[in-house]
Amino acid sequence: MNAFTLSELFDGRFGAAHAWTIGLCALFVLVTLAITLRARSTTKGAVDFYAGGRGFSSTQNGLALTGDYLSAASFLGIAGMIALQGYDGFLYSIGFLVAWLLVLPMAQLMRNTGRFTMADLPAFRMRRMRVRMACTVSTVTVCVFYLVAQMVGAGALASVLMGLHDGGTFLGMDADQARTAAIVLVGVLMIVYVVCGGMKAATWLQIVKAVLLLAATGLLTVMVLALFSFDPRALLSEAAEASGQGRAFLEPGLRFGVEVPGEAARTFFNKMDLISLGLALVLGTVALPHILMRFYTVPDGRAARSSVNRTIVMVGAFYLMTLALGFGAAALVGAERIMSLDPSGNSAVPMLAEELGRLAAGPVGGAVLLALISAVALATILAVIASLTLASSTSIAHDLFGHILMWGRPRESQEVSVARFAACLVGAVSIALAVQAQEQNVAFLVGLAFAIAAAANLPVIVLTLFWRRFNTRGVEWGIYGGLSATLLLMLFSPVVSGKTHPVTGENLSVLPAGIDIQFFPMENPALVAVPLGFAFAVIGSLLSPERNNARFTELRVRSLTGWGVDRG
Image (tube, rainbow, N blue to C red):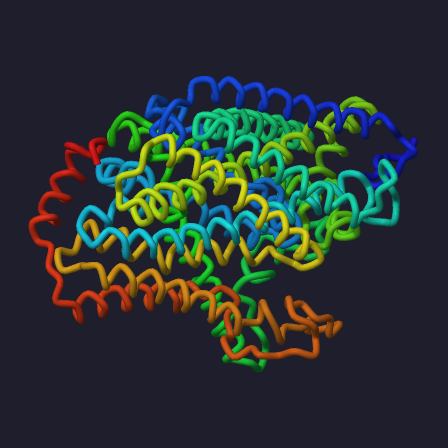
């Protein structure tokens, strides 16, 4: 009997895969809703809603950080890139992992100096209202970009997994309708998790997701290696041969830093683009709002540092396993089949799971393993967007409402109510944007979110902690300057307009082919935007007469000891 392809499993002729997928996804949703209702009963005030009562252990927070960080882009996207581009696909994994070496020394300092949001750090030293407004703008911008990308990914994943990409129907819905329904459903679940359970629900959701993701990835890795007698060399050789690229598949240059014969300038900018991407991934991680919030859910700075140590181990193990998944998909499924289903490569892991299950236990095994991976992918998306929504709603309620509109004297019940309303608002806006953008290639939004965090947030964090001369104007110039520079450079980059396929001439940009406003030659702006963010922050500080030497000294003591942090 011939092997079923992923599309054959989901085109309506085989109901088992549909049943398993829907059943496992429904089970996950029910379990997480039960966790959310349990968390709601123990969420009483702002500390519970924003920081989970600060009662999570370093191991629990390490799992939650792992869940926060490993998005669908990590689970599906990186393995797919490795399957299609080989060595170059793994460069993403390296960037994502190396980033945590920067997070490690920052975790304890951040926990010791803040209460709920990034704005708590600079606001301790400076004019609070202006600083908190700038931090809120940056936080919400980063979170919304990231949210839209994740939700569009949820819609695309639903379309592929239900076999609707090639004209089929599911429950009377075509591909477009199914994508929209998936986006709305995921958005509604996201709102429920945050509104009802706050940080406690989001943390347990991340823990469950991290355990499922690591377990599923580990299972697929063992099954792949077992087929090659646990000999990585045999796996790499087979993957290189099946790719059609030969040894080039295992060497750099297929996707990043491509050398263009006769075009020295283009070759140079290709290599700079690779450096820029790495800079965004490494520097952006420590300044992502939903990652920063995790440091405040543990009792003290030492626990925050310990949780990052545990995260590094788990994230490192995961990214090593993506090698086996990516090269396994290249060897066992093949680039041609992967690209026929999804040119971006996001279908590589589901197709690999189906193939491994079929080889192990026939068609039923393929359906079950495929359904398991589908459920894990759903868990991955739901967990990440819940944390992003919580981060943005917390900033709106704590910084904008609590400290600006209420002059720092709100009742806790008021602030938590506003946070819940803000979660609904952010969720509704994200759903609307994702539905409108579902036909676009929004993969660049993830890189853009990292670049904004690196260019706008990181300068403020670093200079607040380590530069005595830093002041309110420096914060504003750093955030607004870094944010504006990143957005403008991306607007005039090949991602938005002017990029075509060198062979087919196909338009590869967001805007239609007839529009070309490109003048910035790189696809990721971090290499230029991050230095600009730091420069704006430094220049703004030097142009202001404000001094806060005493507060800086107190902040330094607090960052090293944690003394008095939870009192305001």
